[in-house]
Amino acid sequence: MNRLPISPSHALRVLTGIALAVTAALLLAAPPAAAHPMPHSVLLLDVHETSVAAELELPVSDFSMASGIELDGTTNAALPAKTSAIRTYLADHLHPTTVQGKAWTVTFGNIALGRAEQTSTGTYRELTVHATLTPPPGGDPRHFVLGYDAIVHKVVTHVTLVSVRQDWATGRVSGTGQDAVTQVGVIRIDTRTMTVPDLTVDLEKGSAWSGTYAMFRLGATHILEGTDHLLFLLILLLPATMRTDGKRWRRTVGARTAVGRIARTTLAFTVGHSLALALSAFGRLDIPAQPVEVFIALSILVGAVHAMRPLFPGNEAVVAGVFGLGHGLAFSLTLAEMNLSTSQLALSLMGFNLGIEAVQLLLVVLALPSLLLLSRLPRHSTLRSACAVLTAGAALGWLFDRLGAANPIARAADSAGSHTSQLLLVLIGTAVLSTLWAGVLRRRDRRTTRTRHEADLATVPVVTVLDANSAS
View 1 (cartoon, one colour):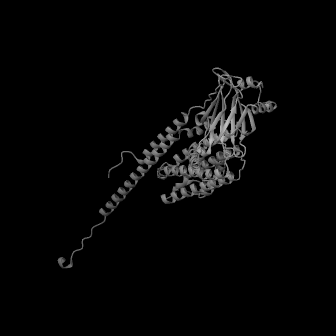
View 2: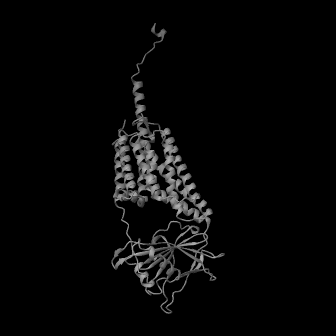
View 3: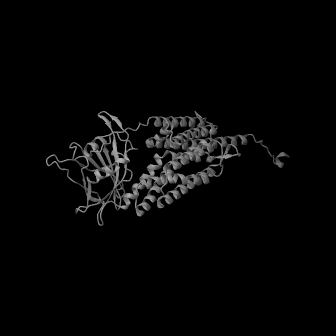
């Protein structure tokens, strides 16, 4: 019988080491976030069915110079004393109207001051103001005229960049940062007339399909970048191929049993988070983010401990469903920030959930071959424990971070979401090689069985029975 040059267990250990090394390199290579303050104003628009939400980002120095409201040395604690003056000033310089000239209603909301930052040109600080722009009856929030000259009428070198950040009807649902918005115009002074022209905002019509498909993409991206959600599911699946004696994971189960457990656990997690997502979204529940995020970190920690020592053997599906409720509440925070109408919310919920499930199913299918082959290795318990310890470390990092103690472990774990493509390639490569090695093992087992059978036949004593007539 031909022997393999290296054993499958050794090959998979080498493969696992390479995968872990690549993953660690990707985590450590995540670039730090950097702010790029600019000396101009930014007006971000979130377009809804019946109104437009606006966020104004204003340089404090230019705003103080133009308005006469001194904010340079003001803290957020002292800001409330000046918010009335800020609102009055902005109300005099923000005038949206219909195309026919009918005035819109402007309502101002939260006002906040950012932290002072040192730049190459000096100290930069930003004032953020939220407002709601509501058209009159018959007005169209997708077509209007924006009159705005809050700073440019005094600081002639100043400009205001006007961009759409969110517009469900055209599929823009996740714009964050200046590189993820659609600029619709620039407001600056006309040096020939020394006036500030109005800006006409004319957005394309859009459709329900665009919004639904965009939410599908957002759900898929959310689960890929949300490493905590994915890690919880995978750590619960890790011991699915094992049988316990009550205190420890011992023997492996058959492939059919393992696949059934994995399917039930995945389905329970899906049902749990889908139910919570629907109830919280349609109920318009105002859920605080911190307790939800802390709950998710705890769920991952419990799953990691269970992978090392059985806490609820045979009940992984029930636990996945219960903890899935908390993960669904976290998903709902994304939808709650969009302020969608009921019809848009229903379509968004369907698209968002389908996106989550599609990617979740894909990743489980990719992980399945590795899980099955891993259970056949002599040192399966060592590899399983190592994965569980790494997961527990990430969970503890997230837990402390979400309780207010920032730490590098949490930042490294979060950074995995910025390397989705590379991590997927590692997972796909591991799945393919695991499947190939499983085939090698099956062929070797068949050859071993055939060889033993032939050897057994060779050792059977041959009894020669002579014909009675010939014997006589």
